[in-house]
Length: 277
Image (cartoon, rainbow, N blue to C red; front, side):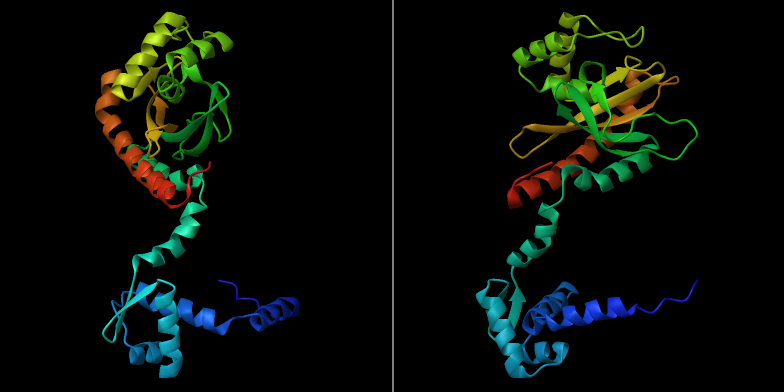
């Protein structure tokens, strides 16, 4: 391992300039909250002073300040944290976009099923891949983040279409006339409307060989706390000898569990500070 390089004079100067702007009281307040975060259930004034290496008087002022701001409560001579401290962590959580929230979920799901997993959103008649996890292997599906796919012929697109009004579905099929990508592609508009209805009723979609020969996928919706569909989560794979029943049995439960985890994150973020992609 190469030796760590000493900071340059410019870096040292920047650090010194930053230190000159440091608010000691704020730093001490954050240090005190970190003491609680490490598992300390309560503190007295004396214990806080010892933990931070300050006088009892300074520790008392710090504790009282945090109490007045709602981050601590006092019972007798003991101070406890309140749920309001979660706001400090949620500030970062609330700034995360849907693809960022989905990253860990996609990776975990991909590791479970050893197949490509994607998150897609609706955009002007197409499904757009906004997050993706694909295991390392020789044969891969050539679908990258930002790729726009025809909604009617993709399992995620059908999930997103299925949760729209029938009038919107008809308008979509009129504006984006279905075309055949393979011999399996369903292009009949009446049949597609029936498929959208079925997907809406069952809550998932399986699609085999309609967009690309030899590939299949299964998708479920991601809903916000009000029930609105925000995105779709999918598993895509080489079809091989897999049947639609195989996909339902082997992959759907894991996909639904992953969707529930992601929805829980989304709902928490919505409760804190709205939601933006």
